[in-house]
Image (cartoon, rainbow, N blue to C red):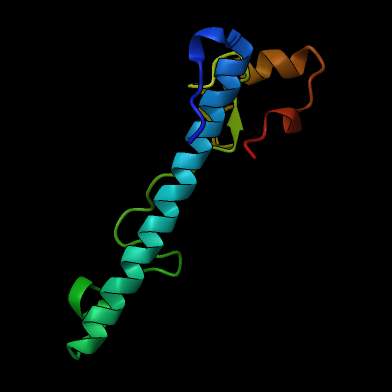
Length: 110
């Protein structure tokens, strides 16, 4: 793996790297979660059970119980830790930027 020299990167480059890392971590977690689900389903079937029998009936979206969290849809380019799902009241950071003429699509997490 290529060594990254953080001390030679600008703040903008570091922020872009942080966003890229957060996206990569999220994608990896989803992939590993899907893999574990497949393994559990195979093990349950091999033992003569269904996943529903072992863990209860899941909703269509794969969750049980409460609705759960919604993934963020927008990210503040000036502070990557600030995100918004696109639901509910618009956060001040995106309201201020859109009031200045920026398009909301510019802040979509890709």
